[in-house]
Structures are given as structure tokens and as C-alpha cells.
Length: 460
Image (tube, rainbow, N blue to C red; front, side, top):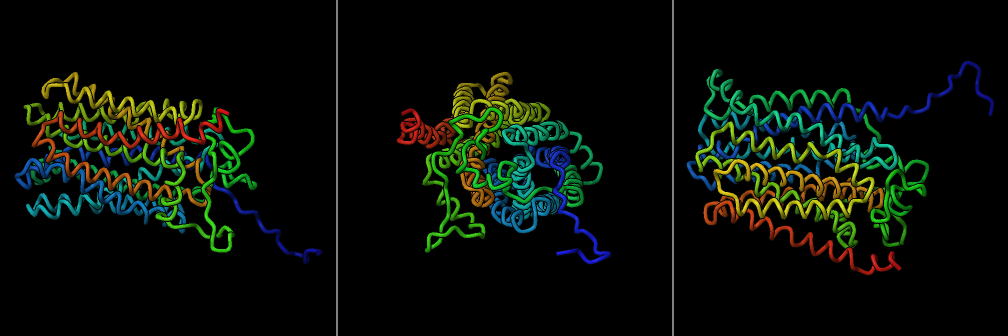
């Protein structure tokens, strides 16, 4: 049909620039790293001082992780409905509110308020974790894990700097008339405020849950082979090729257009050995890391070590978590998620064994154990997150991501809450022994995956 004279040709929708979005995510993660680490480095000690009970120190991390668990699914729903930038901005804004509540609690001496503040503060961690999935959505085919690892790596600078700023923050807080140990939360509030403004105003990203490999009908990424295409992308391996796509059908057998809920996505995914292994890799790695890490500052201060040394050890730990993440991302894209997850589990076992044997005042062994703990977490998190993203149908990705993050944070919240009790009863060795038990389900799922029917089918 001829176009009327003078009519304008409609402009095609302009897709957001993936490289620019990845750059913004990287910068924002640096700021968010400062926000999380500067406050949480001393949160357990602050809570122990406010309550007068050492065992309550574990509830500091528990409250923060529980807050992250509570908001993980709502943030995933918000990402689907309004975009990743809105979900991330809301998460970081809640963290600002949380930091201010912690400052108010310490100033007033009202201990219950500090737990509410730390719960809201945990939304910043939830948003930072959601950003790793956003990185896969702006990645080129076959580079999903590497893009994710770059965003996690950017957290290194902020997260390592955060604990090292503990004493400086304390001095700033004292100069402002705030109680001891509260100053670092001033830094946190400022960092998260900048993060909120940055993602709300500058970040634009392709639709949540859509990978580059989904373009042009290649989607249902899990069903069409590794990385969603026949080429399989750079470095994709058979180990990352889903054996059977997880799909959703209604009573008539037709797949619905609308996205499914997070709990439904989780129920469907755990029926698939590969997806279950991916979920357990994330949940177990994070639970072990949080349970051991949160009690390390309390353990060290009880043995007479200074806040500066505590900050140094936590920085080494965070360096292990994020510093080697580009290597982990490269390994996932080259040798497959399953192998990297198994490697991470072995590293976590080694870290726990060293933690059991190390004397409390041995800086070398404690630092080594915490560094390996972070390294094992990095392998499990990047390998598991990539496998979660690529092993299910495209419509399940974001709901499953939210459900997985909620599950991981709920488990870690329980771990953090109980770790203080375990430390008081059995010492730091007991905390690390419990960490070994947490890894058992992951080992069982890995064994099932390696020797199960689907593995035998591939070998045959």
C-alpha cells in the first residue's frame, strides 16, 4: 500500500548498546562492592558490642543475608516487568535505607533496629548478585561466563578496599559524633546512593532473561544446543549442553506466553539433574562461604588480633572471591560449568580442612583458608550461575534466577545464625567441620550427574 505523502517512516526500535551496558554494570559493581564490604566487615563485631553477646554476632550476617533472600524474588519479578535497571536501582536504594537504620540503631543503642537495618542493607547484595545475570544478557554468544566474571571481578576493587577502610571509616564516624564501629556504614550509604543514581539514569539493557543466543528464534536456549545455536559458541562444551529442556505447559499442552513464577520454575528445575546440580553449586558454595567468613572476624578478635589484621584477612578473602573471577569465567566457557563447579567444591573442602587445623592467631594459615574459601566460592558461583542460565528454557531463566538467589540466601542466613552458636560451642574448627557437611549434597548431585542415565547416554 503506498505511503501517504509527507508521512514519516517509523524508526526501528533501537536496541541498547551491549558494550555500554556492560561497562556501566562493571563501574556500578565497583561502587556496590565498597558499599557492601565497608559496612559488613565489622557488622558482626558491632552487633556483638550492641547486644553484649558474642554469639549474636552471627545474626548480623544472617539478617543481611535474610534480607537479600526476601527481596531476591521480588527483584526478579521487577526485572521482568520493568527492566533490570529498575530492579537494581530499587535494591541499591533499599541498601541506603538499611545503612541509615544501622547508624540510627547504634546511635540510639536500640539493638533490634540494627537487625532491621541489616536486613534492608542485604538488598544491596541481592542487587549485586542479580547484576551477574544481567551481564550474561549483554554478552556475545559463547562469552556469557566471561561477561559475568568481569562484572564480579569489578567488585574486587570495591570489596577489597571496603574492609581496608574500616579504621578510616571509624575515625570519620567518631569525628561526626557517631559511636565506635558505625563510621563504615556512612561510606556504605554514600556508595549505594551513587550506585542507585547510576543504574537508574544510565543503565539500559535488553529484556531481562534474553541472551544474544536467543535472537531470531534460537531461543528456548536450552533446547537448541550449547549456547543456543548450532555453532555452540566459543569454548562451549558438551558438558554444558542440556540433555532435556525444562519447559512449562498448561493443561492443553500448549506453552504459555507469560513467564512462570519463581517457585514453579524452581520445582521444574530440580527435576533435571543438570539444573539441580547448578542450583546446589550456588546454594552450597554461598552457604559455606558465609558461614565461615562471618565468624572469622569474631574468631580473630577473640585471639587478640587487631581490626587492621581482620580487615586484611577479609580483603584477602574477597580478593579470592572476585579477583580470580575472569579466570573462572574463561574456564567455564572453555571446559564447561560442571568441571569448574567440581573444582570449586574441592577448593572449598581444602579451605575447610585448613580452617579446622589452623591456630586462631596464625595469620598465614587463617589468610590462606579464607583466600581459598573465596576462590572456591568464585568457581561454584560462576559455574553454577552460568549453568542455571543455560540449562533451562528461556522463559524460566529470570524466575529461576530469583528463586535460586532466594534459596541461597535463606540457606546462608541459617548458616550465619548458627555459626555463632557453633563457634561458641566447638570453636572455629567446628564451624569449618559444619561447612564440610554442607558440601555433601553438592557431591551427591555431582556424582549422580556424572554416572547417571543422561551421562551414560552421552558416552554411548
